[in-house]
Amino acid sequence: MSPLGRRIARWLPAVLILGGLAFDMGTPHQYTAAPFFSAAPLVAAPLYTLRGTVLTAVAALAGEVWVLIYRSMQDYTEAFTESLTVLVVALLALGINRAVRMSDAQLASVRDVSEAAQRAVLPMPPARLAGLGIAARYVGARVDARIGGDLYAVQDTPHGVRMIVGDVRGKGLEAVEAAVIVVGAFREAAEQESTLEAVAGRLERALQREGKRREGLDEYEGFTTAVLAEIPTKEQSVLRVLNRGHPAPLLLAPDGGLCELAPASPALPLGMSEVAGWPDRTDETFFPAGSLLLLFTDGVTEARDRVGRFYEPATRLRGRRFRGSDDLLDTVVEEVSRHSGGAPADDMALLAVQRPLGA
Image (cartoon, rainbow, N blue to C red; front, top):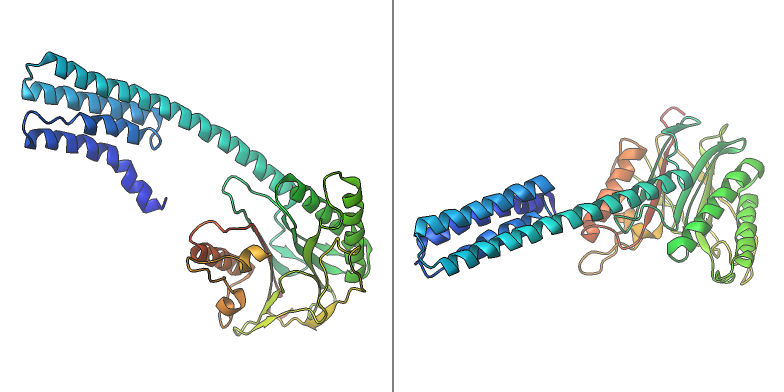
């Protein structure tokens, strides 16, 4: 529900009570306003606190009693029945409010645990790393699920700033476990291996070992699309990218120009070397000062609008200028949400890196 819708809904119990009074005063005696007074606490139950629901219930009962006095009803059976109906519904509303509050508390606890897991697996990178501006976002397709199979990692290494954005096949805990393995293997390999090809080889072997070890994970189908990138510390005008079946990163120039960094040689995702294999190839390109590198998972490119059109980041971002990495990611996340009409259909992991002017 939109913020405007929530504000309107919160006024609805008061409108129902006032409407009941107006209805009773403007209609013949044989009509009853009891449905209005009964509905008010029921509407308040999921929207208000316990105190607010109690106050609404008391106001509804007071309204019903005032109506009975105002009409000077002589049929005590009918008056008792109407009052009892409002009272029973009011008590039911209090029970609903209690159940909703308990459910909210449980959901908040789950979210806290999920948020802690996200911080452990996908910690937020520092805003600056080796002079580069860094920003990352993870947007879950479900509000109560803060982490899934999408992943990102970035770190400063002896070989330069290295990063990965990937998407594990599948959903649920198996995807999360595989994401943990990929991130852990990347952090170790990024420090030790001298080339991106060697880093990709380490990730490949880690997934193959896990596929053979874990029962229930098909070693031939448990794969991860990923893109690896490297910006040498001593030569930040150089950008190296190795793509393993992942959406191509985008390079945004300070003047609004945009380049899609598609791989020269397409490659299969990580974890599929048993199906087919060939040597990895790293593509090298110029990384101008002030430019922004954007890496993302397919939750961005597969977001659809109401008529089924995909969100196309290259088309949407071309010709635009951004203040920095955070501004770029905030824009993409907001536009995808608006394009899809709410939460995305799939999780999204995004990573942006900016080479500062003069660097």
